[in-house]
Structures are given as C-alpha cells and as structure tokens.
Length: 193
Image (cartoon, rainbow, N blue to C red; front, side, top):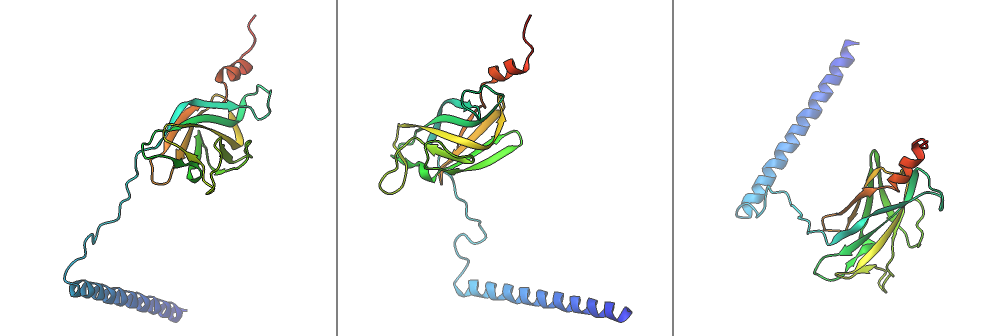
C-alpha cells in the first residue's frame, strides 16, 4: 500500500515542477518579446474600463399595477405599466435593444422583449411602432408607455424597482408599488362597525 501512495506523490510533484517550468518559460518569453519591441506597450498592466454614458431615459410618473385577472381587485398584481421619456440630446434611442429587469423583495426577473400589445408572462413591450430596420426608435423628448407582465404575481403594495437599460448607458430606475396598496389594505382589514 505504501508504494502506491509514494508513486502518487511523486507524480504530483512532477506535474507541479512541470507547471512551474512552463510558467517560468512563458514569463521569460513575454519579457523578451516586450523588450524586443523597444519598451512597454501603452496601457500595459492596465485593465480596460468602459465608462457608461448618462441615462438617456427618465421615468415619467410612477408604476401602475394591475391584478392577474381584469376586474378582480385582489391583493396580487402581475401586469405593470409606466412611462419613460428620452431625455438625451443625441436623437433617437432604440428601445428594442433595452434590457428590462424587475426587482421586488426576493423577486428578481430579467424580462424578454415581446412584439405583442399584451405581453405574455416574463416579457415586456413598448407602445411604439417598429421601424423598417426592426428597431423601436424613441426620439429625443418623446414619451413611451412600457407594459410588462411578471412571471408570477407579487403582493399588491410591494415596492418594485424596474431598471430599463440601453447598451452603453446608465440604467433608468423606476420605483413604485405594485398594484393599489389602499385596495390591499382594505381587503386585509376588518370592516368598521
């Protein structure tokens, strides 16, 4: 039994020695290649940093929530709408490239874009027509209603944060309460005498 353990340890030592030898060789080759070029290249040892532009989108108003079944004033909601505006001065932004994320308590969902006027669970849609290139342009100064449907209903009155982010921009944050908190409180409180 003792011989196989010694053999395994020798194999591990040989692998480690080979690893050290290869990394040392690679280091010397890298240093030599840098010296042959006449010095250190610009930006060597610096990680690239991408700086996001300011948010081109801003919320207009708050989030409005609707119960899972129309006409039912329950204590849960799964359809949300809100309005955003293009506040950027560079012209139109393409909402079809936006990422929409919803956070509420321990609930986090990244929604997919939908072409339907009434989105399916886990999707969102914008009330803008598509252009000839397949994009959804929102021109500077214009507003647009976003409608989204959560994968599962959340309690009415729960604080939600919706992030709408265009590539390369800071996100637009919309915070509000799901549904009508007054209706939820009325449903849970006993009637007055």
